[in-house]
Length: 246
Image (cartoon, rainbow, N blue to C red; front, top):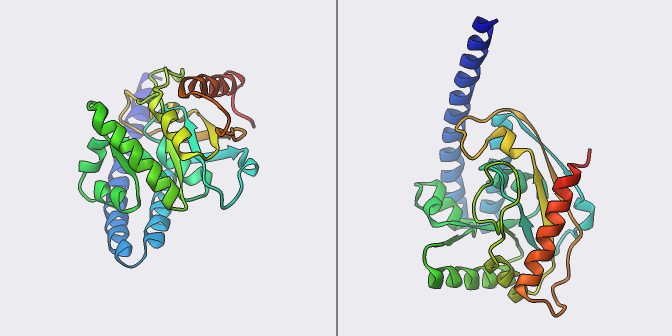
């Protein structure tokens, strides 16, 4: 039995290393294609970014089930507010929401060769959380981008991935952006990505993840960013407590 467990563990590690190698090669190839295509068409570059994320999940053996997409209007822009469990959350939302999206990410990701350049090209926005002034400037850029481009925005107000799947405290800067943008806010709940790639883990385990799209929330009413933060966090916590819809 111990020998079987060791053999299985070894096979899983070998598979994990192979997946990372395939993802790395895929990222480099798609990144180069995305950069070149952006010279001719930004729309094409965004489509290639979507295909890359779908390809990444396929390589990793991750299946995504989404419920609630019927609540969204096809050509309408939204600010999506999501919980953050794993490094897989972004590709899962990219593939699951099925619409042009941008997200705000920590600045370090933009320093990665090819990958970071591709992020800039398709309209993702970096934020320096260590500098309050620069963080505010990032929010202003995000609002302008949302208003100018036909694209929705994804925000992770926890600011970091959860260790155990519980929802951390929300930073209110995300909700300042939502109020300034003046578009509907949609809570999005991600289930089970941490089982496939936990914060402390380095290998991806194949599996099924769920995404619940909640009802859009009108922000045109007289709400403060703190009130909006509490409201959306409560929605997300309630959905997590109930579990994913099968």
